[in-house]
Image 1: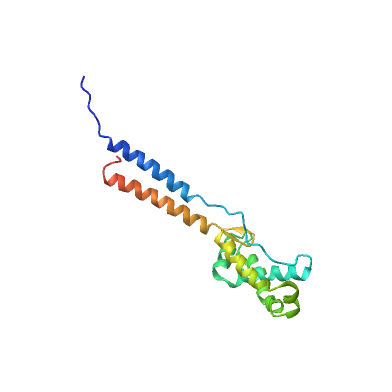
Image 2: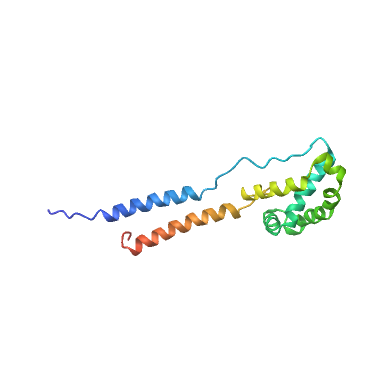
Length: 159
C-alpha cells in the first residue's frame, strides 16, 4: 500500500481560522465596567435629590442620541417614557438658575451631563442597558470572522 502525504496547508489554515475566530469572539464580548460616574449630590436634602433627578432626565431628554436610546430601551414604549423627559426639561431652568439651590446642591446639571456621557459610553442610559455599544463591537467581531472564512475559501485553504 502506498501512502499519499497531504499538504499541511489546509490543516494550518484551519488552525489559523480557529485561532482568529476565537480571538474575534473574545474581542467582541462586551467589557463590563462596574465603575459608573460618581454623582456629587447632597442626598440628605430632598430638594437636591429632586434637582438631580430633573437634571438627569433633562440631559437625556435634550440630547437626541441619549433620548432615542432611552426611548428604544424603555419597556413602557416611547409615548409613556417620553412624558417624564419632557416635563423635566420644562422644570430644569427653575433649578439650574436658582442661586440658592446651586449654592446648597452644587451645579447638578453639569454633573448630570458628565455622568450621562460616561454612562452612555458604558452602555447605559438612565436605568436601562442599551445594546448599541455592545452590538457594534459584536458585529465587528462577527464581520472579522466572516471575512476570514471568505478569504480562506477564496485561497482554496478551506473547502
